[in-house]
Length: 114
Length: 199
Image 1 (cartoon, one colour):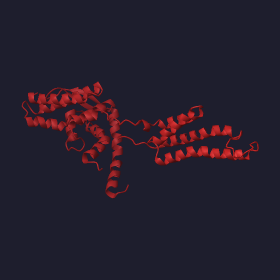
Image 2: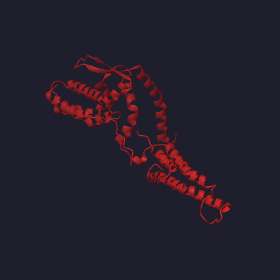
Image 3: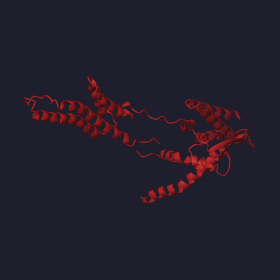
C-alpha cells in the first residue's frame, strides 16, 4: 500500500518539526499563536496550529525551551517561549546535520543513486 | 470574549480535556492552558464582535482536538503475543534443561519442543532443523550405543537392544545435553535477530 500525502508528511515531520520550532525561536522569544501561525502558514510543517503545543511541552521538558510571561498590548498576558543554551546547541547540531542529509535525499530522489 | 466565541472555545476545550483524560495531569493541564491562551489571543484579534465564520476559521486553523490529543498521548504499542515474547527462547532452554530431572523431566522437554514448534519467533527452516536435531541427536547416540553393544564382548547376544555398561551413563547425559545445546543455539539466533523498531 502506498502511503498518502498526510502519512508521508507525518513521518517527515516527526524528526524535523521540533527543530523548526527551535529555529522559530532563534531570533528571540515568541508566544504560542505567533509561532503556530508562522509554522503552519503553508500546511507543510504543521497540519494544525494546535499540534504545536504538545511539542512545546516536550521541548520544555527536555530543557530546550523556557517560558516566561509578558504583558500583551491587546489582551491577557502572553506565555513566551525562548531557547535555552541546550536548545541552541541542539538546533546548531541539527542544522549542521540537516544540510548533508537533505542533499543526500535530493541526490537519491533525482538520480536514483547516493 | 464574545459569547459565541466563548462557547466555541469552551466546547473545544471540553472535548480536548475529555480526550486527554489518560494523559498525566500536569501535561494535560499544560496543554489545555496553552490552547486556551491560543484561543483567547486569536479571538481577541478578531475584535469585540467576530462573525461565526471567523470563529469557525480560528478553530479550523487550530485543527481537530483529536489531532492534539493524539500528539499528547503516547501511541499504545500493540501487545506482544505470549508466544512471541523475547524471553520465550530462554523458557524453551529452561524446559529442555529440566529434561535432566527424573522422573518427569521429559514432560518439560516435550512442552519445550511444543513451544518451539508453535512460537512465531523461529522461521520454518529453523523449526525443521531444530526438530531434526532433536530427533537425530538421540538417534545417533542410540546408533552408537548399539554399535558399542555389538562390539562389547561382555554382551552375549548383540541382537539384544540393551545399552552397554560403558555407554549407558553417557547416553543418559548426552541426549538431554544435546537437546539443550540445540535449544541454546536456537535461542541465541532469535536474540540476535534484528527486531522491527517502532517509529
